[in-house]
Image 1 (spheres, rainbow, N blue to C red):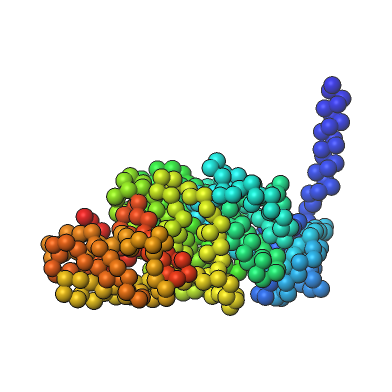
Image 2 (cartoon, rainbow, N blue to C red):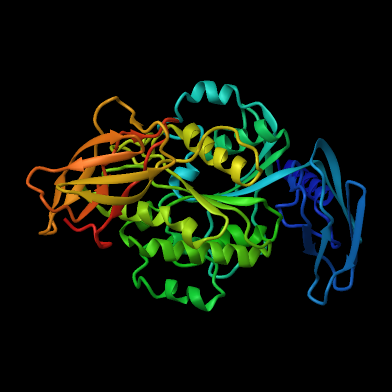
Length: 469
């Protein structure tokens, strides 16, 4: 038995020696077999070596060289690459040689947030139509990179995971929203798609925000008792994201906010800080950023109003963050489950907007009805909408979830009718309408949609910010 243990240990050492370079250049895990490199822009490649060691990176006919600095760090950049779905070798040569196989070139997206982004194809409640979806997930050129959960007080220089091509066997633990987003891009662009999924259920936006800018310091002071280790500002950026930066990406998608739902309008400012920090650290300019507006959920009470406030803050992100957008999903939520299972609709709606705005290729309508103003007409109010051609309701009934504010400040349920691209409102006992609000509650599932079937999100007009009843 003792000899067997010695033999096993010796064999393990031989294997380790065969796969791990002894000295010489090393790479962070984001560079590995099956990786997807971003097309059409410069591609940073970096790693470690002995001080002064000469390092060369070779890929797709290019070879770029450098020497490691005094601390052993080195970095080069590949010139912009053309899309290529045929797996190639990626070589790094120093005192040793590292070869990453089956490397392709296409579109790389960073996917982050909390549980609804983390929600996997095999999650407890299962994705809608999960058996068919998993069986059909035969996309070897859609590839996932999913760092493990990790908190850190300081930025880490690596994350320990690997790129995984999509098959029915590998897709179950991957993000459903990210996959459906990536699948849409892959179908329409016909290029490989890489999905870097850094997500953790129940986490706050502050934890994903990098430090380093004076304007972000207020994040560190806004809450004194953070509760869980993963809620402390910057710790998830440090532990799960810093180690992949500045890997070239096309853009980022974000599905988070439940943990910050009581922040109200402050969530907009925190989003500005998040995106500013990401863009600063990546050094790629104003890369695209698209978020999902939270779905209806009862939280503490279906008649609570905190959700609508943060939904409105999310809708204002494009006004403050260049090259950004949001997706409304209040028609595919479940007020009794914070994790609605129709992730395909969510991922595809995000991708439809990205296809149009980022890639200039219209696939399906994605613009939702947006209120542009109100006009008082005696005791009635006329609310005008854009993106409202064919305005209607999902169920053929009168529009729901509208309220009018009277002179006392009280909110009264409103009767509503559609008139072209407008909705005309009136409420019993209200002779002088002072404001309008729509879908104001945690459990609001309004039925107003445009002719393309896309839903209107919450809004307020003619009243102050507070949603207090």
